[in-house]
Each structure stands twice: as C-alpha cells, then as structure tokens.
Length: 304
Ligand SMILES: [Zn+2]
Image (cartoon, rainbow, N blue to C red; front, side):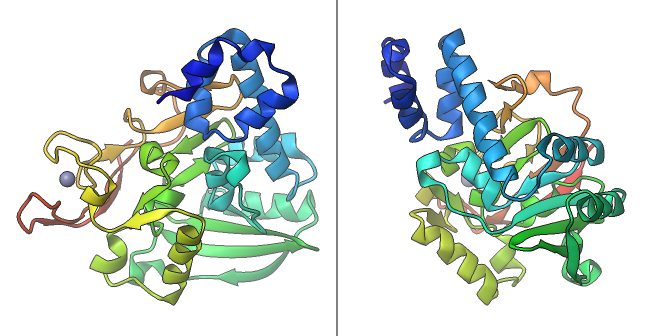
C-alpha cells in the first residue's frame, strides 16, 4: 500500500519532530512521491534531503559549498555506501568510514590537488589496477587521508564517470550523488532491499574473496541478493526493462533522479540538457527462467 497517500491528509497537523520520524523510515523514492502531494511537504522533504546529504559531506570536508562546486566543475560523482545511504531510509543508514569520489582522467589532478590544498588531505597510497588487462573501468585509485578522514578518488579512463559504477558487484550499490542529483539506477529492487548480482562477476570469472565479503556485508544488512532474475519478481523478458538483459540508459524512465537543488524527482523528459554523457548498458547474464539457455554478456557503452 502507498503509505504516503494515507499520511498526507493529516501531515500538516504533525509536529516537526514527528514529521522527521516519519521521513526517517521512508526511502527517497517514497519521499519523492510524498513531496508531490503538497507544497509544504515538498519544501520539508527538500530541506530534509539537503540536511542528510550535508551531514554526510561534513564528515569528510570542511567547505561543503566549494566541494559541491568541485563536483560540478569536474563532473565527478560520489558512489558507494554514502550514495546508498541517501536512497535508503535514514533509519537504515550504515556508517561509512570513507567516501568514494569518482572522476575522469581529465579532472583527476584537479580533484586530488583540491582536496590536498583546500581540505588538508595527503595521498597515502596510489593504486593502478591495470585496466587494460582485466577490463576494469578503473585506471587509478588515490587513497587520501586527513587524520581520521578518508577519501578514495577513483579515476576512470572512460569518458563517462559512471562506467565503474556499472561494474559494481550488484545493483544495490549502483547509485550515485552528483553536484545536483541523487541517482538510483535500480530503485524498485533497491527500495525493496533486493539486488541482482552483476553477472560480470561469475561469467567473466571475477569473483574473489573481496567481492564475496562485500556481498555478505549487504546480506547482513537485510538485502536479498539473487543471481536469478525471476527470484526478484516475475517480468516479461521481451518487454520489461526489469529484465537484466534489457538495454538501459542513464536517461530511461527506470532511473530515479532526485534534484537536490529544487527538491523534486526529475522526469526523464527534462534531462536532455544534462552535461554528462549518456551511458547505455545491459547487465546480461544467463537467460531468464522461462527462456532457453540464452546467455548475454553485459555491456557498457558511452552513447553521447
Ligand atoms: Zn528476463
């Protein structure tokens, strides 16, 4: 049942404390639907999400507005558990000890130098995972430290900064924060605490102890992870974009975009003027249950 509709009639009579308690148990796509019901609700949800984002950012940086400008100028994004935290209800938030900033080679030095000079970080380590050999979209990782604070700068040699996110172990973590948006690529599954394991892990033999540990971390948090699409719900393979074999794009209707500046869910038709290149992907994997043994490899392409 859609609880947001039920609540709306009485919502303005609640004290701000009770309102926050209700917000704290709703995932962002539900908050977005609720915010559309009344202007007052829209303002409250908008302010609530800015506060939540800034609370995460202030753990890692002193100057939040300048950091956001850096993200905008360099088209960098935040992904990993901090992005998932903003999609899931505040009450289910998991403390993250570091923040993952994704950037392209074009802006790599701008981002690293900014965090060194403006925020007092030092480079503790620099790792190059040899992307040409393992197909990884990651060219380098800088491990930055400033006392207890830790930032990983993940650099991709791809033109679109989102490419590494699509190589994550499961759909649960395919979320990101830009200067203007909070984005979830698989909102329906994620909000229901379900995730599809990236077929790349087992079809291209990429499973290792670290990915198993990462997957276990999420199952311990109550997420249900499946490698079999129909365990996540029945879909019509030929028509549904719920099928992992379906070709998706970063501007399709299944993407969830929350614009943090004006506090609204962005409609796909309004995303033409996006600065970021459009990315096209398919998760692929083994054929769905009702099909024969069709296999499709996952793919990621930069379209524009
Ligand atoms: Zn299917």
